[in-house]
Image (tube, rainbow, N blue to C red; front, side, top):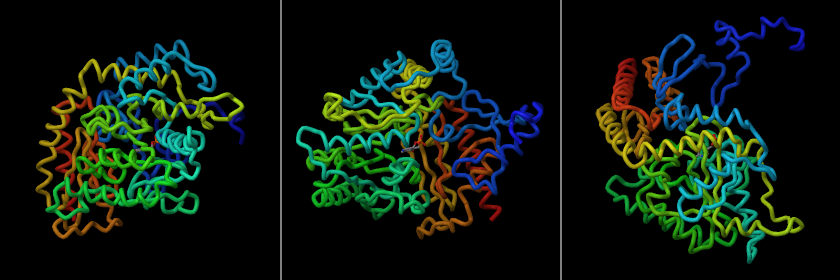
Length: 462
Ligand SMILES: *Cc1c(COP(=O)(O)O)cnc(C)c1O
Protein backbone atom coordinates (compact mmCIF):
# COMPACT_ATOMS: atom_id res chain seq x y z
CA UNK A 1 0.00 0.00 0.00
CA UNK A 2 1.54 3.37 -0.92
CA UNK A 3 2.30 5.54 2.08
CA UNK A 4 0.03 8.32 0.86
CA UNK A 5 -3.15 6.27 1.28
CA UNK A 6 -2.38 5.01 4.80
CA UNK A 7 -4.26 6.46 7.69
CA UNK A 8 -2.16 9.23 9.30
CA UNK A 9 -2.45 7.54 12.70
CA UNK A 10 -0.43 4.58 11.47
CA UNK A 11 2.49 6.86 10.66
CA UNK A 12 2.40 8.80 13.91
CA UNK A 13 5.17 7.53 16.18
CA UNK A 14 3.69 5.72 19.12
CA UNK A 15 5.94 4.86 22.03
CA UNK A 16 4.61 1.33 22.37
CA UNK A 17 5.35 0.63 18.72
CA UNK A 18 8.92 1.85 18.71
CA UNK A 19 10.51 -1.47 19.76
CA UNK A 20 8.45 -3.34 17.17
CA UNK A 21 9.16 -0.91 14.35
CA UNK A 22 12.79 -0.75 15.45
CA UNK A 23 13.09 -4.50 14.89
CA UNK A 24 10.96 -4.58 11.75
CA UNK A 25 12.46 -1.68 9.85
CA UNK A 26 15.67 -0.32 11.36
CA UNK A 27 18.58 -2.48 10.23
CA UNK A 28 21.33 -1.74 12.76
CA UNK A 29 25.06 -1.52 12.06
CA UNK A 30 27.21 -4.50 13.13
CA UNK A 31 24.19 -6.02 14.83
CA UNK A 32 22.71 -9.51 14.48
CA UNK A 33 19.12 -8.42 14.01
CA UNK A 34 17.74 -11.88 14.80
CA UNK A 35 19.03 -11.44 18.36
CA UNK A 36 18.72 -7.68 18.69
CA UNK A 37 17.02 -6.46 21.86
CA UNK A 38 15.77 -2.90 21.29
CA UNK A 39 17.45 -0.26 23.41
CA UNK A 40 15.96 3.05 22.38
CA UNK A 41 17.60 6.24 23.56
CA UNK A 42 15.22 9.16 23.59
CA UNK A 43 17.31 11.87 25.18
CA UNK A 44 20.68 12.47 26.83
CA UNK A 45 22.42 14.94 29.07
CA UNK A 46 26.09 14.98 30.00
CA UNK A 47 27.38 11.40 30.06
CA UNK A 48 23.88 10.03 30.68
CA UNK A 49 21.73 8.42 28.00
CA UNK A 50 18.05 7.96 28.79
CA UNK A 51 15.86 5.34 27.16
CA UNK A 52 12.15 5.47 26.39
CA UNK A 53 11.31 3.97 29.77
CA UNK A 54 13.33 6.64 31.58
CA UNK A 55 16.20 4.29 32.47
CA UNK A 56 19.60 5.98 32.50
CA UNK A 57 22.90 4.63 31.17
CA UNK A 58 26.34 6.12 31.56
CA UNK A 59 27.67 6.42 27.99
CA UNK A 60 30.84 4.37 28.57
CA UNK A 61 31.90 4.36 24.91
CA UNK A 62 31.16 8.00 23.99
CA UNK A 63 28.41 6.90 21.58
CA UNK A 64 30.93 4.78 19.70
CA UNK A 65 34.05 6.78 20.38
CA UNK A 66 32.93 10.19 19.21
CA UNK A 67 31.35 12.22 22.02
CA UNK A 68 33.81 14.56 23.76
CA UNK A 69 31.91 17.07 25.90
CA UNK A 70 28.87 15.05 26.91
CA UNK A 71 25.41 15.21 25.36
CA UNK A 72 23.25 18.29 25.16
CA UNK A 73 26.12 20.69 25.83
CA UNK A 74 24.60 24.18 25.76
CA UNK A 75 27.47 25.73 23.79
CA UNK A 76 27.42 23.11 21.05
CA UNK A 77 23.62 23.07 20.91
CA UNK A 78 23.57 26.86 20.61
CA UNK A 79 26.23 26.85 17.90
CA UNK A 80 24.18 24.40 15.85
CA UNK A 81 20.92 26.30 16.43
CA UNK A 82 22.52 29.65 15.52
CA UNK A 83 23.94 28.21 12.34
CA UNK A 84 20.66 26.50 11.51
CA UNK A 85 18.93 29.87 11.53
CA UNK A 86 21.38 31.03 8.84
CA UNK A 87 22.16 28.05 6.62
CA UNK A 88 21.68 24.30 7.02
CA UNK A 89 23.62 23.21 3.98
CA UNK A 90 25.29 24.43 0.82
CA UNK A 91 27.57 22.38 -1.41
CA UNK A 92 31.36 22.52 -1.12
CA UNK A 93 31.67 21.85 -4.86
CA UNK A 94 32.91 25.19 -6.12
CA UNK A 95 31.19 27.02 -3.23
CA UNK A 96 31.90 27.78 0.40
CA UNK A 97 30.38 28.77 3.77
CA UNK A 98 31.75 30.69 6.77
CA UNK A 99 31.85 27.96 9.46
CA UNK A 100 33.60 25.51 7.12
CA UNK A 101 36.16 28.19 6.22
CA UNK A 102 36.82 29.03 9.86
CA UNK A 103 37.08 25.37 10.75
CA UNK A 104 39.59 24.73 7.97
CA UNK A 105 41.69 27.62 9.30
CA UNK A 106 41.46 26.34 12.90
CA UNK A 107 42.35 22.78 11.93
CA UNK A 108 45.33 23.98 9.89
CA UNK A 109 46.59 25.91 12.93
CA UNK A 110 46.01 23.07 15.40
CA UNK A 111 47.23 20.13 13.33
CA UNK A 112 50.86 19.05 13.47
CA UNK A 113 53.32 20.81 11.15
CA UNK A 114 52.13 22.25 7.86
CA UNK A 115 48.96 20.21 7.29
CA UNK A 116 47.31 23.33 5.92
CA UNK A 117 44.73 22.07 3.42
CA UNK A 118 41.46 20.58 4.59
CA UNK A 119 39.20 18.37 2.47
CA UNK A 120 35.82 17.63 4.07
CA UNK A 121 33.68 14.49 4.12
CA UNK A 122 30.90 13.24 6.38
CA UNK A 123 32.30 9.97 7.73
CA UNK A 124 35.68 8.66 8.77
CA UNK A 125 35.65 5.96 6.10
CA UNK A 126 35.27 8.63 3.44
CA UNK A 127 38.12 10.67 4.96
CA UNK A 128 40.33 7.59 4.60
CA UNK A 129 39.16 7.06 1.00
CA UNK A 130 40.10 10.67 0.29
CA UNK A 131 43.58 10.13 1.77
CA UNK A 132 44.11 6.97 -0.30
CA UNK A 133 42.95 8.60 -3.53
CA UNK A 134 44.96 11.76 -2.82
CA UNK A 135 48.15 9.73 -2.24
CA UNK A 136 47.54 7.68 -5.38
CA UNK A 137 46.84 10.72 -7.53
CA UNK A 138 49.77 12.66 -6.02
CA UNK A 139 52.35 10.25 -7.44
CA UNK A 140 50.83 10.61 -10.90
CA UNK A 141 51.08 14.37 -11.04
CA UNK A 142 53.79 15.52 -8.63
CA UNK A 143 56.91 17.24 -10.02
CA UNK A 144 58.65 13.97 -10.87
CA UNK A 145 55.73 11.60 -11.39
CA UNK A 146 56.14 7.99 -10.32
CA UNK A 147 52.88 6.31 -11.30
CA UNK A 148 54.22 2.91 -10.27
CA UNK A 149 53.77 4.07 -6.68
CA UNK A 150 50.16 2.93 -6.49
CA UNK A 151 50.06 0.46 -3.58
CA UNK A 152 49.62 0.87 0.15
CA UNK A 153 51.31 -0.68 3.15
CA UNK A 154 49.01 -1.32 6.09
CA UNK A 155 49.09 -3.23 9.35
CA UNK A 156 47.52 -6.42 10.63
CA UNK A 157 44.31 -5.84 12.60
CA UNK A 158 44.15 -2.26 11.31
CA UNK A 159 40.74 -0.65 10.99
CA UNK A 160 40.18 2.32 8.71
CA UNK A 161 36.47 2.09 7.89
CA UNK A 162 33.91 -0.01 6.07
CA UNK A 163 33.84 1.33 2.52
CA UNK A 164 35.74 -0.91 0.12
CA UNK A 165 38.88 1.23 -0.16
CA UNK A 166 39.17 1.79 3.58
CA UNK A 167 38.35 -1.90 4.17
CA UNK A 168 41.15 -2.89 1.77
CA UNK A 169 43.73 -1.27 4.05
CA UNK A 170 41.98 -2.75 7.10
CA UNK A 171 43.18 -6.06 8.47
CA UNK A 172 40.55 -7.42 10.86
CA UNK A 173 39.42 -10.77 9.50
CA UNK A 174 36.13 -10.65 11.38
CA UNK A 175 35.16 -7.50 9.45
CA UNK A 176 37.10 -7.75 6.22
CA UNK A 177 37.85 -11.37 5.19
CA UNK A 178 34.42 -11.98 3.64
CA UNK A 179 34.93 -9.12 1.20
CA UNK A 180 38.49 -10.10 0.22
CA UNK A 181 37.61 -10.67 -3.46
CA UNK A 182 36.48 -7.04 -3.71
CA UNK A 183 39.50 -5.47 -2.00
CA UNK A 184 42.74 -4.27 -3.62
CA UNK A 185 46.04 -5.83 -2.62
CA UNK A 186 48.13 -4.22 0.08
CA UNK A 187 51.55 -4.90 1.54
CA UNK A 188 50.71 -6.05 5.05
CA UNK A 189 52.92 -6.08 8.14
CA UNK A 190 52.00 -7.43 11.57
CA UNK A 191 50.83 -4.65 13.85
CA UNK A 192 53.33 -3.45 16.40
CA UNK A 193 51.60 -5.05 19.33
CA UNK A 194 53.28 -5.12 22.72
CA UNK A 195 51.30 -8.25 23.59
CA UNK A 196 52.96 -10.29 20.85
CA UNK A 197 56.43 -9.62 22.19
CA UNK A 198 58.00 -11.77 24.90
CA UNK A 199 57.07 -10.44 28.34
CA UNK A 200 60.65 -9.59 29.20
CA UNK A 201 61.20 -7.54 26.01
CA UNK A 202 61.59 -3.82 26.71
CA UNK A 203 59.23 -1.59 24.72
CA UNK A 204 62.20 -0.02 22.91
CA UNK A 205 63.20 -3.48 21.77
CA UNK A 206 59.69 -4.22 20.48
CA UNK A 207 59.71 -0.93 18.57
CA UNK A 208 63.16 -1.68 17.15
CA UNK A 209 62.15 -5.13 15.88
CA UNK A 210 58.99 -3.85 14.22
CA UNK A 211 60.84 -0.94 12.65
CA UNK A 212 63.45 -3.33 11.26
CA UNK A 213 60.61 -5.31 9.71
CA UNK A 214 59.15 -2.14 8.22
CA UNK A 215 62.52 -1.09 6.85
CA UNK A 216 62.87 -4.45 5.16
CA UNK A 217 59.40 -4.13 3.59
CA UNK A 218 60.11 -0.57 2.42
CA UNK A 219 63.44 -1.63 0.90
CA UNK A 220 61.61 -4.27 -1.11
CA UNK A 221 58.47 -2.36 -2.05
CA UNK A 222 59.14 1.40 -1.94
CA UNK A 223 59.10 1.78 -5.73
CA UNK A 224 55.48 0.56 -5.81
CA UNK A 225 54.28 2.11 -2.53
CA UNK A 226 52.23 5.30 -2.53
CA UNK A 227 51.79 5.42 1.24
CA UNK A 228 51.90 3.69 4.59
CA UNK A 229 48.57 3.89 6.47
CA UNK A 230 48.63 3.79 10.26
CA UNK A 231 46.47 4.41 13.31
CA UNK A 232 49.02 6.32 15.40
CA UNK A 233 49.75 5.01 18.93
CA UNK A 234 46.56 2.94 19.26
CA UNK A 235 44.77 0.53 16.94
CA UNK A 236 41.20 1.11 18.09
CA UNK A 237 38.99 -1.57 16.57
CA UNK A 238 41.79 -4.14 16.92
CA UNK A 239 41.01 -4.01 20.65
CA UNK A 240 42.80 -0.83 21.81
CA UNK A 241 46.17 -2.28 20.86
CA UNK A 242 48.95 0.08 21.89
CA UNK A 243 52.21 0.66 20.06
CA UNK A 244 55.54 0.89 21.89
CA UNK A 245 56.95 4.40 22.34
CA UNK A 246 59.22 5.48 19.51
CA UNK A 247 57.52 3.30 16.94
CA UNK A 248 55.45 6.03 15.26
CA UNK A 249 58.45 8.31 15.08
CA UNK A 250 60.46 5.53 13.51
CA UNK A 251 57.72 4.93 10.94
CA UNK A 252 57.85 8.62 9.99
CA UNK A 253 61.63 8.55 9.61
CA UNK A 254 61.58 5.41 7.47
CA UNK A 255 58.73 6.59 5.21
CA UNK A 256 60.68 9.84 4.60
CA UNK A 257 63.85 7.95 3.85
CA UNK A 258 62.12 5.67 1.33
CA UNK A 259 59.99 8.40 -0.24
CA UNK A 260 56.68 6.86 0.76
CA UNK A 261 53.83 9.06 2.06
CA UNK A 262 52.48 8.59 5.58
CA UNK A 263 48.72 8.62 6.16
CA UNK A 264 47.79 8.99 9.83
CA UNK A 265 44.25 7.85 10.66
CA UNK A 266 43.45 9.84 13.82
CA UNK A 267 39.72 9.25 13.57
CA UNK A 268 39.76 7.70 17.07
CA UNK A 269 42.84 9.32 18.57
CA UNK A 270 42.24 12.91 17.43
CA UNK A 271 41.00 15.69 19.73
CA UNK A 272 42.45 14.83 23.08
CA UNK A 273 41.32 11.35 23.97
CA UNK A 274 44.85 9.96 24.23
CA UNK A 275 46.10 12.86 26.35
CA UNK A 276 47.51 14.83 23.41
CA UNK A 277 45.40 16.84 20.98
CA UNK A 278 46.62 14.47 18.27
CA UNK A 279 48.43 11.18 18.83
CA UNK A 280 51.07 12.35 16.31
CA UNK A 281 51.91 15.23 18.67
CA UNK A 282 53.18 12.81 21.31
CA UNK A 283 56.01 11.70 19.02
CA UNK A 284 56.38 15.04 17.19
CA UNK A 285 55.33 13.39 13.96
CA UNK A 286 53.92 15.26 10.97
CA UNK A 287 52.23 12.88 8.54
CA UNK A 288 51.66 13.80 4.88
CA UNK A 289 47.93 13.19 5.22
CA UNK A 290 45.86 13.25 8.40
CA UNK A 291 42.34 11.77 8.66
CA UNK A 292 39.91 13.15 11.25
CA UNK A 293 36.32 12.16 12.04
CA UNK A 294 34.32 10.88 15.01
CA UNK A 295 35.15 13.56 17.65
CA UNK A 296 35.74 16.38 15.16
CA UNK A 297 32.24 17.75 15.75
CA UNK A 298 32.38 16.80 19.43
CA UNK A 299 30.48 13.73 18.25
CA UNK A 300 27.34 15.74 17.47
CA UNK A 301 27.07 15.67 13.68
CA UNK A 302 28.64 13.70 10.83
CA UNK A 303 31.86 15.52 10.01
CA UNK A 304 35.22 14.29 8.78
CA UNK A 305 38.30 15.82 7.21
CA UNK A 306 41.50 14.89 5.44
CA UNK A 307 44.38 17.33 5.89
CA UNK A 308 47.25 17.61 3.41
CA UNK A 309 50.64 19.34 3.32
CA UNK A 310 51.42 22.12 0.80
CA UNK A 311 53.66 19.65 -1.06
CA UNK A 312 50.70 17.36 -1.73
CA UNK A 313 48.16 20.11 -2.28
CA UNK A 314 50.51 21.82 -4.74
CA UNK A 315 50.56 18.74 -6.98
CA UNK A 316 46.81 19.18 -7.57
CA UNK A 317 47.08 22.76 -8.85
CA UNK A 318 47.05 23.59 -12.56
CA UNK A 319 44.75 24.72 -15.30
CA UNK A 320 41.39 22.98 -15.58
CA UNK A 321 42.48 21.29 -18.81
CA UNK A 322 45.32 19.51 -17.03
CA UNK A 323 42.76 17.51 -15.04
CA UNK A 324 44.78 17.72 -11.82
CA UNK A 325 41.92 18.47 -9.42
CA UNK A 326 41.16 15.90 -6.75
CA UNK A 327 38.62 13.60 -8.36
CA UNK A 328 36.45 13.09 -5.34
CA UNK A 329 33.59 14.77 -3.50
CA UNK A 330 30.84 14.17 -0.97
CA UNK A 331 27.44 15.83 -0.98
CA UNK A 332 27.58 16.89 2.66
CA UNK A 333 31.32 17.65 2.86
CA UNK A 334 31.90 20.97 4.65
CA UNK A 335 28.36 21.04 5.98
CA UNK A 336 27.91 24.31 7.93
CA UNK A 337 26.01 22.73 10.84
CA UNK A 338 28.75 20.15 11.36
CA UNK A 339 31.38 22.86 11.02
CA UNK A 340 29.61 25.06 13.58
CA UNK A 341 29.45 22.13 16.03
CA UNK A 342 33.14 21.42 15.38
CA UNK A 343 34.13 25.03 16.06
CA UNK A 344 32.17 24.98 19.33
CA UNK A 345 33.85 21.72 20.30
CA UNK A 346 37.31 23.20 19.58
CA UNK A 347 36.37 26.29 21.65
CA UNK A 348 35.47 24.03 24.57
CA UNK A 349 38.71 22.06 24.28
CA UNK A 350 40.61 25.36 24.46
CA UNK A 351 38.55 27.26 27.05
CA UNK A 352 38.24 24.39 29.51
CA UNK A 353 41.87 23.31 29.10
CA UNK A 354 40.63 19.80 28.49
CA UNK A 355 43.75 18.32 26.93
CA UNK A 356 46.25 20.13 29.15
CA UNK A 357 44.52 19.66 32.50
CA UNK A 358 41.36 17.59 32.50
CA UNK A 359 42.41 14.51 30.54
CA UNK A 360 45.62 13.82 32.52
CA UNK A 361 43.77 14.15 35.84
CA UNK A 362 40.79 12.05 34.75
CA UNK A 363 43.04 9.45 33.12
CA UNK A 364 44.75 8.92 36.48
CA UNK A 365 41.33 8.57 38.11
CA UNK A 366 40.24 6.06 35.46
CA UNK A 367 43.44 4.05 36.00
CA UNK A 368 42.58 3.89 39.73
CA UNK A 369 38.99 2.90 38.98
CA UNK A 370 40.07 0.09 36.66
CA UNK A 371 43.01 -1.14 38.77
CA UNK A 372 40.91 -3.50 40.96
CA UNK A 373 39.81 -5.37 37.82
CA UNK A 374 43.38 -6.60 37.34
CA UNK A 375 42.84 -9.09 40.18
CA UNK A 376 39.97 -10.81 38.42
CA UNK A 377 41.00 -14.23 37.04
CA UNK A 378 39.59 -13.41 33.58
CA UNK A 379 41.50 -10.18 33.11
CA UNK A 380 44.52 -10.73 30.88
CA UNK A 381 45.50 -7.13 30.28
CA UNK A 382 44.40 -3.57 31.03
CA UNK A 383 45.64 -1.06 28.45
CA UNK A 384 45.04 2.63 28.79
CA UNK A 385 46.14 5.83 27.10
CA UNK A 386 44.43 8.98 28.32
CA UNK A 387 40.68 8.36 28.51
CA UNK A 388 40.78 5.37 26.21
CA UNK A 389 41.13 1.89 27.66
CA UNK A 390 40.76 -1.76 26.73
CA UNK A 391 40.34 -4.59 29.22
CA UNK A 392 41.19 -7.88 27.63
CA UNK A 393 39.50 -11.01 28.98
CA UNK A 394 40.82 -14.54 28.56
CA UNK A 395 39.85 -18.00 29.80
CA UNK A 396 43.35 -18.54 31.14
CA UNK A 397 45.41 -15.36 31.02
CA UNK A 398 48.58 -16.99 32.39
CA UNK A 399 48.56 -19.64 29.67
CA UNK A 400 47.46 -17.12 27.05
CA UNK A 401 44.33 -19.16 26.34
CA UNK A 402 41.47 -17.00 24.99
CA UNK A 403 37.79 -17.68 25.49
CA UNK A 404 35.94 -19.59 22.80
CA UNK A 405 34.47 -16.68 20.77
CA UNK A 406 31.14 -18.54 20.68
CA UNK A 407 30.78 -17.87 24.43
CA UNK A 408 30.65 -14.12 23.69
CA UNK A 409 32.18 -13.41 27.07
CA UNK A 410 32.96 -9.75 26.40
CA UNK A 411 29.46 -9.16 25.12
CA UNK A 412 27.88 -10.86 28.17
CA UNK A 413 29.89 -8.73 30.59
CA UNK A 414 28.93 -5.57 28.69
CA UNK A 415 25.27 -6.53 28.59
CA UNK A 416 25.28 -7.00 32.33
CA UNK A 417 26.98 -3.64 32.85
CA UNK A 418 24.42 -2.01 30.56
CA UNK A 419 21.56 -3.52 32.59
CA UNK A 420 23.22 -2.00 35.65
CA UNK A 421 23.40 1.43 34.13
CA UNK A 422 26.71 1.65 32.28
CA UNK A 423 26.48 1.24 28.51
CA UNK A 424 29.51 -0.64 27.17
CA UNK A 425 30.14 -2.35 23.85
CA UNK A 426 33.09 -4.74 23.52
CA UNK A 427 35.42 -5.66 20.67
CA UNK A 428 35.38 -9.44 20.91
CA UNK A 429 36.66 -10.13 24.43
CA UNK A 430 38.16 -6.70 24.90
CA UNK A 431 35.93 -4.41 26.97
CA UNK A 432 36.28 -0.90 25.60
CA UNK A 433 36.12 1.94 28.12
CA UNK A 434 36.08 5.32 26.40
CA UNK A 435 33.83 7.81 28.21
CA UNK A 436 33.31 11.42 27.09
CA UNK A 437 36.19 13.66 28.24
CA UNK A 438 33.63 15.61 30.26
CA UNK A 439 33.01 12.67 32.61
CA UNK A 440 33.16 13.60 36.31
CA UNK A 441 35.25 11.88 38.95
CA UNK A 442 32.32 10.16 40.65
CA UNK A 443 31.06 8.96 37.25
CA UNK A 444 34.48 7.47 36.52
CA UNK A 445 34.33 5.62 39.85
CA UNK A 446 30.82 4.40 39.08
CA UNK A 447 31.92 3.12 35.68
CA UNK A 448 34.75 1.15 37.30
CA UNK A 449 32.59 -0.35 40.03
CA UNK A 450 29.69 -1.33 37.73
CA UNK A 451 32.13 -2.96 35.30
CA UNK A 452 33.86 -4.78 38.19
CA UNK A 453 30.51 -6.03 39.50
CA UNK A 454 29.42 -7.16 36.01
CA UNK A 455 32.64 -9.11 35.59
CA UNK A 456 32.28 -10.73 39.01
CA UNK A 457 28.62 -11.62 38.43
CA UNK A 458 29.28 -13.02 34.94
CA UNK A 459 32.17 -15.20 36.11
CA UNK A 460 30.12 -16.41 39.12
CA UNK A 461 27.32 -17.33 36.71
CA UNK A 462 29.83 -19.57 34.89
C1 LIG B 1 35.57 4.60 13.19
C2 LIG B 1 36.87 4.59 12.42
C3 LIG B 1 36.91 4.86 11.05
C4 LIG B 1 35.66 4.99 10.22
O1 LIG B 1 34.89 6.09 10.54
P1 LIG B 1 33.31 6.08 10.18
O2 LIG B 1 32.86 7.45 10.53
O3 LIG B 1 32.68 5.00 11.01
O4 LIG B 1 33.20 5.78 8.72
C5 LIG B 1 38.14 4.93 10.44
N1 LIG B 1 39.28 4.77 11.13
C6 LIG B 1 39.29 4.52 12.45
C7 LIG B 1 40.59 4.37 13.16
C8 LIG B 1 38.07 4.38 13.13
O5 LIG B 1 38.05 4.05 14.42
